Length: 366
Ligand SMILES: Nc1ncnc2c1ncn2[C@@H]1O[C@H](COP(=O)(O)OP(=O)(O)OP(=O)(O)O)[C@@H](O)[C@H]1O
Image (cartoon, rainbow, N blue to C red; front, side):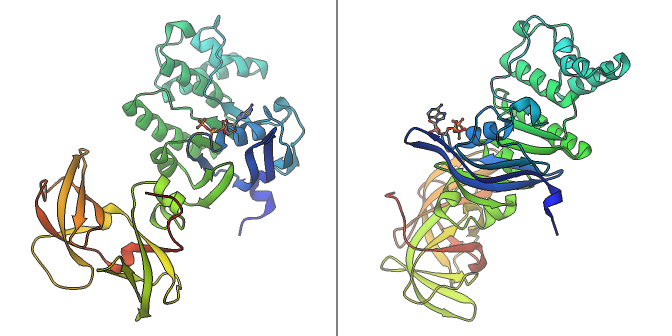
């Protein structure tokens, strides 16, 4: 059982208003000691504003922020005892990479041998060994971003706030760095709050993900819960690809909810939530949960579909298909067997437990 003492960050009913605009509206969440939490959401949803309010660069219009139990809502950044790495990584232009990394340690009056070791370690982690003597202007944008990261890591902060620290890096480096960063965070047990709009980054690095939409929190959950059971249209749509079917509950029996979609499609859905007969529902289905059958079969949730479009992603292939009843369906498979081409007809099957139900109908036009 987690207690208040376990909480490194507490955000309570925090708002930020700019005139009539509520950039952040009544946001509350906690980050426990040693936890890695991501703020994930589309551009403009309030992630950066939330992080900057915790850092103290933006003052909250309302609500309270506590760091290690201490109310810091009205304190300036330097009194909050948090480290941060922001998108606009302000390096000292006249200092070398090593001097930039050493700067905070010198201010803290650490001895020379310690500083030397920390420079070596943090540059190694960020893949910058050998760049010690360069000036920031002699580095690429991504390298500068890594220096900013190395500079923050060298201080081994107990609490680190990061705003898209890997956004300027190419994909291979980003993937390598997020693993390094995650391992380091675990090793140092460093409480981390991390802003990203990259869902893969958030899912792969975080203990929990806070999903924001329009200045508010849409969901707080562990990565697999967010993906496997999105519980809302927004989360299902924003994280990964989802098939949506609008339907009406025709009956519930033996743990199966029968949902009628359109005039002729019937789905048999595992009853993981209680929905009464007659209710409007949306049925969600992840594309990789659809199985392409080797041959025609009979049975519940077996459909004939025509392949309309094929996208090859390397490890996976995504098919856009049309079920014989008219609904469209995304199917994703591993690339070890290319099951179909455009124009082919295939038989597909879906396990009832692979569907998710949410009550109500589509909020937006498709
Ligand atoms: N100084 C400001 N004055 C007025 N509106 C602002 C100000 N700063 C931010 N906003 C607005 O507040 C909202 C949230 O901005 P914020 O930068 O927190 O979003 P974000 O989720 O971090 O987006 P991104 O991923 O694009 O960085 C946006 O609609 C933005 O236009």
